[in-house]
Length: 98
Image (tube, rainbow, N blue to C red; front, side, top):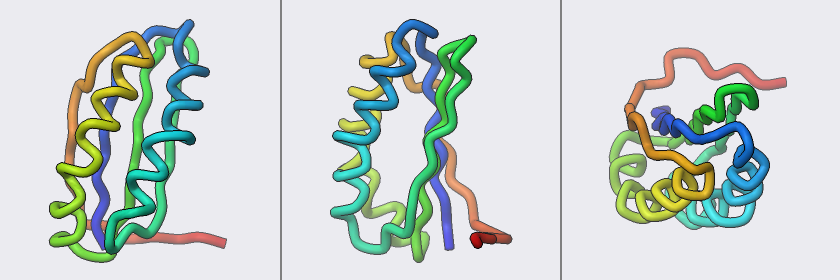
């Protein structure tokens, strides 16, 4: 499995709007992509920083989804009053759920 992380540096007053945008716009874009396995959104309400993590069944599917989610990611950053600070790609070494 593979994961893409997207770091957004926004403003504290826009965190709730960013969460709602992620739920209503980013997740549907992810769910429509082949190989999608799940997502997390981590936020720091004091700084306005957000970290979106999407998990994929293969590196190829993760890369193929990039164009489909780029627009949603950029719009999420605007909604949070900031910008995309980084997008990184990782191989998932351990994936534990209950």
